[in-house]
Image (cartoon, rainbow, N blue to C red):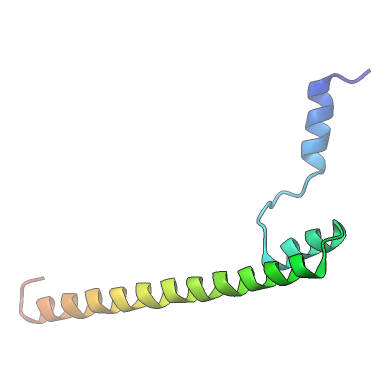
Length: 81
């Protein structure tokens, strides 16, 4: 007879290693659970909003990095680096 701990280990080992919830896996789970069209539409809208927000963060990070690198290059050119 298995102990609870042994059964828990079996269940954990059966799970996929990656638990990252991608937009597609989120939709797959919703469809598998029998989600309504309205729920699927909301999930797709949320995914679109998250993509836009992520893109904005990336653009801001690149702009800050470029500003920093420009200032650094200027300081180095003036002998202050």
